[in-house]
Length: 507
Image (cartoon, rainbow, N blue to C red):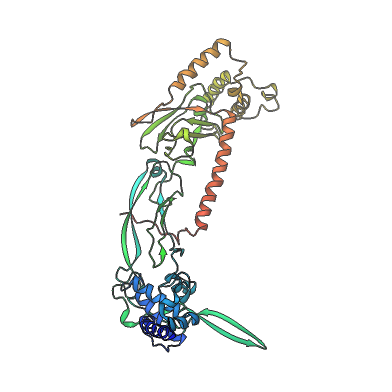
């Protein structure tokens, strides 16, 4: 091919090269400066971004390609000479969203309302969780309940997608970055300091007055009232939390937080105080004071249970004597065990109730006639073990009152009986009486309830714990007191005190 033919082909090819398309996309002339290219891209990118109401994904991609070429001096020179064909083989096209993030500063603005489009892998921050305190009584936790509560939250405005406006203009002070750089010179050294742009408050853009969303008055959100149904299963503990995911207030480009409802012990004066001194997970502890006569001759007292029924509590052994500080048990009369409890073998069952007895000794016997006191003394003396010789009346202590002798005899007998139940050793009991006692104890144990109470009133038979079992229970009570204080302290430490944690409003 002659040189003339090559020249004509080259000239023909030059005429068919389109090297103005990118300029037209950005609304620029071919002699536009680098600053003009940057400003034009910001304006067009805001307008056609896919997340905007008037956005156009294809147009946004074309604008990003045009900017990627015209903002690079080498690529622009090739494009001006050979058009898009001259750029073929120059590597993959950049992600248009990454270009946008680089232009508008991925970390600028601190999460304001301005469009903040990073790459697809951008991690969204979560809006704060909303916490409520729901006062509950022990009876409510025993039975379980369902309650409807009113919840008011802020939802993104559907008219402006939560941005507060239908259009944004890049800030001219910071060129849309949301950051201004101040340079200071100290001697021969230059210092640069970055700070949020004061003109746009770090947002990187401004809202034109005619673009303000009228539906939300530029706030970006509207308030909405919602009813949440709280279902509390039977047997859960104090400070148990129930979470409603994604029900907190919404914000643009944020993951929606949760609503967290905490069950706190009720301190209302309208709710009657619980008769139970402690709750040990699924077990209950009841403190009960009885008279000396009941301790010696058998006890019987009414119990209004959390299940709403009334019971009569008696000893499973009519001959048993209650000692001060004794621990007795009512099996299966504690709290219900939830289906998701950690203890597998107790799921769906009930805990136990422990009775901690306090024996009230009389301070004086002045109201009892002398003849009656003598008969009481003789009656008790016939049943109590013999007091040691040194404790018997002597001329030196003959002046002491008869009431003191009774009390001292009772105390001595209590001390002599300590540990007899565990050892099963009683020197005053014959073989035949041992057999009789075992039969009576077995019969009494058979009286202990074997099913959950379904009647309005019947008798419950308590069993005494051994000394070892009592010591273990005392340790459990001490540990639970400590854990209860820790749970309350942790709850308040998280800011859930009475001032910062509103109570649920029942519907």
